[in-house]
Picture 1 (cartoon, each protein chain N blue to C red):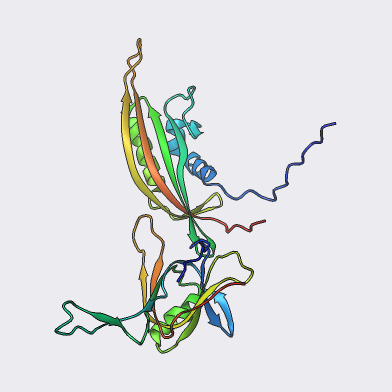
Picture 2: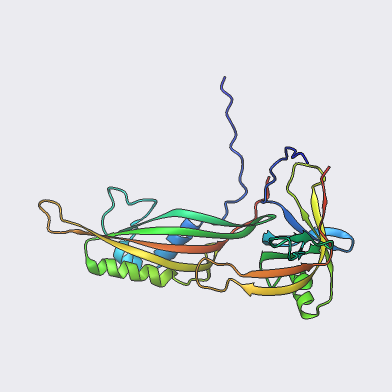
Amino acid sequence: MLKQRRRPVRTGNPPDLKQAIVAALQASEEFQTIAGMQIFPTMLPQTARAPAVAYHVFESDHTMEQGGAAGMREVQVEYEILTYLVSDMEAMCELLRNRFQGLIQLVSGVLIKWVSFDGQADQYFEPLAGSDLGTHYKSLRFTYKLRETLPTHT
Amino acid sequence: MPVTDASVQPGEGTLLMVKISAAYVKVAQVFEVDGPEWLVEAIDRTALDTGFILTRPSKFPEPGKISLKVWYDPNDTNTQAMFVTDATTPGAVQDYQLQVNDDNTTHATVGFSAFLTSFKITGVKPKSSNLEADIELQCTTLPVVTPGT
């Protein structure tokens, strides 16, 4: 008879930056007006309707000292924005910059110590046959600096 | 002198320790250490007939400097007591040890005494930086290597 493995019981998950990002954006009325609930982790799915935003962590650096972890983490996040209208694109970019650039705040349990806006890149996709609506695509990069717990090695 | 095989020891996890009340404790938040060093001066002994610049080793070896960088937290009272106080009211000589991250139960150490010559706060900039302190110490004893057991 197969023995069922018991999952280890976790007493509490540490606050997550991705959850904090989603919470911060969904709390914005302007974001809700433009993109509604269209915020996706990692990548924009094929079924995403513009305007939509995807976010993904592409690099993470954990500060160390000679004795071990130092309790600070730097996370680079890329946002991908998809819109049909230029005005929506500009509004979303300004919304993200306004919400995050230079932020020092506790957001959904994550103590953010600094956010820098590192850059952006534009692309435009021509309309498909039978359509007169092209697609505007922009990627924005931010670096989040946040406190993290020290490992207990247990 | 034959060169024997030696293990490679990681720089990671090698700790700078300071003696406080007869016991060595880890200096907090150190992320880079350069030193200690042993210096031997080259003494000139060129004569008119040597044909080239000739030197000899000094009979007096010299303890050099040690520089270190720490993630600086002004809220940490130990850093304050150890370094900032020594910079503000100079004169204290402390005992230090570099404790090597080797495989021994009692780690190998490099011990020396030193006084503070510089404490400088750096890292204040708006991108990819933490508050740091650059610290320089002048050794007052030749470093002593004690193998581990």
